[in-house]
Every structure is written in C-alpha cells, then in structure tokens.
Length: 536
Image 1: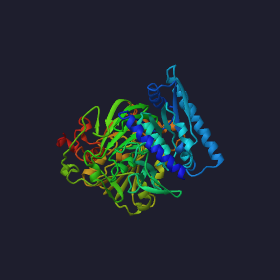
Image 2: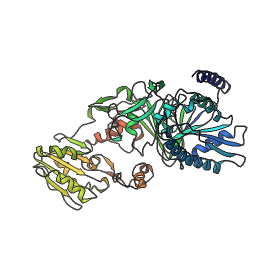
Image 3: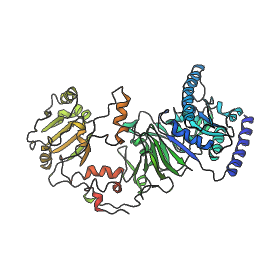
Image 4: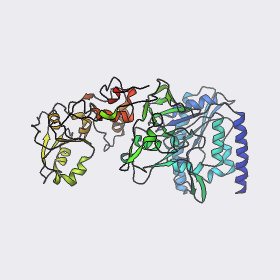
C-alpha cells in the first residue's frame, strides 16, 4: 500500500511538471455515439495527426478496455479470455483503419493493456504502457460505471491526464464516450428506461460524490480531465436517449448543457471548450437548458419533468461547431432572450370540446371502457387488420359504439356524441380528409381523444412516418426509422392537417416551442404564438 502511495505522489509531481512544460498545448476528445468499424477512421485520423507532430515512426495507440470488464473487482479466467478475444478483434480493426490512413513513414501499433479490474491499473508497471510517442487513447464500450470504478482516482487516470494535457487525442465509443465528460450519465435507475426517462429519479447521474467501492472511497464521475461544462450522451437518436439527457441537464449542480452523439457518428471536443467537426453517418444534437432559463424553471408535475425554453441545435456531419463556454453555434447567433404572450397560446374556438392527446390509451380503455357513456371509438390506419380488431375487442361489453374505418369509408355525423375516441396505428396511413367530420363535432362541444398515431394528426403538420419496427429482427429497418429520419427525404411527407382549427393547433406548436424555441422555425410554423413576440 505504501509503495502505491509513494508511486502516486511521484506521478502527481511529474504530471504537474508536465502540465507546466506543455502549457498551451491543445486538447482533443473524440466522443463517438456507437459502433466501431464505421467510426474508427475518424478517431484514427486524429491519432495520426498527433503522431506527425512527434519524433516517431509509428502511430502508437492504447485501447483501454475498462468498460469491457465483467467485474471491476475480479474476473474468472474464462471471463478474462473472453474479454481478451473481443478486445483483440477491436484492436485489429482500429489498427487496420489506422494503417489505411497513415502515410508510408508511419506504421500503426494498437495495444490493449489488460486493465479489467481496479487492482490491475494500480500496479507500478501499468505505467510502462505510456510511451513518450503515445499518439492516442481509445476507450472501448461496455459499462461506463464499471469503467470509472476501475480507473477513477488511480495513477493510470493521472497518467492519462498528463497525456491529455500533452495533446494526446482521446476518444471512446458508447460507454467509452460516457466517461469523457466529468459529469457522467451512468444509466437508468431501477426499472426506468427510454419510455420513462423524464420521470423524477430516472437517471443515474455521476457528479463527483464519493462512494464506497470494495472498501475504498472512489469518486462517482467521469474522467477528471473531461469537460465540466457539458454532459455527453451516447447512442443518442438510435436508443431514444433525449429524455435521459434532458432529465440530467435540468438538475441542480449539473451542467445545464448536453451533447448527444448518435451511433455511427463522432465529433471533436477541442480544449474542452468547443464541440463540432461531426463525422460519420448521422449527427449530434446540443441541448441548452441555460440560456433561456429552462433549468431554473424546470419542475416535476406528477413525477414527470415539465420544462420549456430548451434551445436545441442539430449538427450534421461537417465543419460546424458549438461553443461550450459561450453557448453559441458557429453558424448563427442563438436566441439570447425571448418574450412570449402565453395568454392566448391555448385558445380554442368558443364552444369547442376538450382535445386530449394520448399514447397507449388502449391501456386505459381496457380498464375503463365500461364507464364511457355516449361515446364512439373510431379505429383507423392500422397496417394489420388483426391489430385493429384487438383494439375493437377492448370495447366489447361496453356501451361505446365502434367504427372500424377502412380506406374509402366515410364517417357519419358525429355531433350527437359527447366523447369521440380515435385510435390510429400508423401515421403514414392516416387519411386526414376522411377524418374531417371530427372538426365539426369537436367545435360543437364533443370531447375529442386522439390516441397514438392519431395524436400526430391533431397538429398543424405531422410527419407521415410509419411506426418504428422494434419487433423486427432487422436492425437496418429500425435504424432507418430512427436515425435514418435525419437523412434528406427519409420521411415520406410533412402533411398538413385539417382535423382541428388552426387556432387550436397552437398547442401542437407549443410542443415545438418547448423543445426548440421559435427562432429556428419562422417560415414553417407562422401561426405559433411566439410570432406575436419578439426575439433578440
């Protein structure tokens, strides 16, 4: 134990000297949202560029497997062999990507140290991997909480800090991205997930508090040299991580700025001050809960996050940047203040009924349909007739009239119903002209409940996009329906809707204001209430 303490003290002194000697050296982090082969070239190029500044004939890269571990305390021999086999596969892939890009005078050498437990990173010879010509450090994916339980507060973390200050680029994929920011998202707590990511207490936030790990006090955070002004998130659009990131950045004592990087995509954080130069297939998004006071006004209503005025910036691949300090994108001056008149934002025509937008309303119907009076349920836009029949079956034994609306059918006069429920399964199959009678009934005082895809049709515009096929074994189909939505012409149409009056549709417009703000949408949504206000 004494030997480790003396060794750590010596390393701290050397690190301090190194920081002074290299004052002014630029730093580079490469957060990669997910997947290896497709994004290795983006990382490798940064390592090659750094190697060219050194007196060396190689591109020497350390591939750190902390997050790959089965157990940060100890592993069986079988687990170790399995980890080594998997890491070796990634090692060869990165080395191949590097070799394809490197100039002839440089050869590529990628090494995976056997750092799978906290004990392994605290032996003295572990530092022998840090040669003077180190060109890059890559962090494999896996479990970010285990990665930091292994490395936080150890001599290896200090050695990485010294290399980072020296200008050695460092990047990681998936969990390897998560550890790059000082405030780290550890995952979901308990049974929470993407569907409940906005619930209070849903996110495991590692923000520097001490915790006991195997009898040792270890800080819960990301790497101690990562940026402290932003929270980084991975697999962003692919795994629906928006709610998780948003729920994190509105917390007190947490940076109110988040950057989500999608799979097959990476970017550069330079000098812990700017993010940009996105590379890969899709893109990244910046969420600013600071500029317009979103974090300050955020609250939980019924245990669910309520927040508005979050500024969102979406970065496509290319030379775009965002200042993490100034909270400004490189391509436009972001909104500094915004004044809105909310007094008429939710106005509806006089005499109109209540408009309710639902998701998974069928769960309520299954329990309460028997109590619905003077009601009609309209079932439409289901790709599978059996799915439509399953919804209709929920109303059996109740007084609710059921209309299964097929293509070409016409709705009857609905004015006599007090409650109208519309179930729709596929936004791409909705025929808004067929639903036109809903308008007259609703304006006449009937309650209108729109479920699932029908909720989208209550907006001024909606994306006629088929449901994400999560029940498919074809990952390409899922990718096309999620991340692929950002590709030009990926969505079939942006359809105008005539279900409700334009004035009422301000409430759908408000949802965009909540997340985006008006400054980016002046020509697309002229009836948004914020167009009666000014922005500076």
